[in-house]
Image 1 (cartoon, helix red, strand yellow):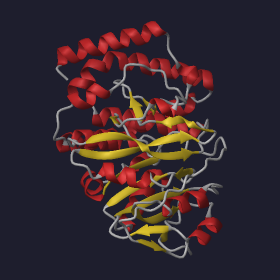
Image 2 (tube, rainbow, N blue to C red; image 1 turned 90 degrees about the vertical axis):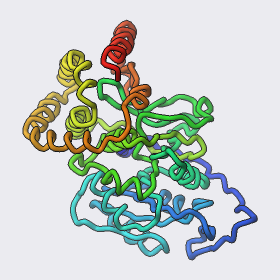
Image 3 (cartoon, rainbow, N blue to C red; image 1 turned 180 degrees about the vertical axis):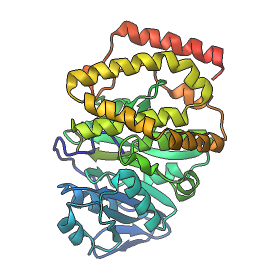
Amino acid sequence: MAEGSADGATGSVALVEQPPSPDRATIVDGTGAGRQANATEVCVVIVVYGEEPWLDRSVRAALASEGVSVEVVLVENGGSEATIAALELIDRVSVIRPFRNTGFAEGCNLGAAAGTAPVIALINPDAIVEPQAMAALAEMAVRPGVGIATGSLRLASAPERMNSAGNDISFLGLSWAGHFNEPAADFPDEFDVASASGAAMACTRELWDRLGGLEETFFAYFEDTEFSIRCWQAGLRVVFVPTAVVVHRYEFSRNVEKFYLLERNRLITTLTCFDARHLAVIAPLLILIELALIALAAKDGWLPQKLRAYRAVLGDRHAIGTRRAFVMSERTAPSRQFNDLLTTNLSPGNLPGAKPPAFAERALGHYWRIARSIARI
């Protein structure tokens, strides 16, 4: 799940309409949305919890996607029954009602299982896809050698600036929205990224089934990072698609429960997805990072959640060990290409107060280069 899926800054963006390609027949359904014959079919999964003011726009924008045939599966996790009941009446919209809050990860898995299209896209309920975005994601997702396509996620309050151009992953296991608040014009080309953003990503159903979908025990947060790492380990790339523009009503939530989930899931991902040599070379730094995070948690008021995350990891150590054995056994590609994408900076743009001193980041860069050379990773 992308950082900041909670309610946040409002804004509007003009969705530019493009004429349909003249060499394709266009079918118009009851919603007025165009659907092109022989187009790639995409199952758009939107997991909804609480009343989301942008949900109606999000669903209708997805249905109006050009160059693809879209089915929307809404997973209703509670609190949005009235809006979803109205949307359910629209052609090509179906609703899954688990009658509990499944969390983002399990919700996405339920939604994907309910669809039939060969391409699966995850879109946040507070995100609006531009008309060509879904086709661009689908086209990238089916390319040979590519596993996941991640969109050009824009800030709703400033659509010319990035919310995420893929997510960064530190070699120490931390992750955040990549290139946050940077000009979108600076990213006109496709490029490989360490992690997709769960707010706007797509992959083939074949890959989704092969990897087993998102890790449901995470509930929410970091599942997109974990899924992306396993994609790289399967020998497939994660690629940023600049033409897949998606506007996101973003705000980094300070809900303390979020910090518990982020910390627990970060630790689980590090322990299950990094190979033994990687863990060995970063072990001394992990201790320092944890001490720094404890200090930060104490200062910012989420120390109980940080300690709770430690207790959860220790309590689930046997299950985590089993999960690690499975993830390592499924790897089919060496780690070097993925490791090349890991960042040595610890300066997430969406958390400006977390920036360490410049000399510390330079030292981390030197450490990682030397450690990789010695460990051959």
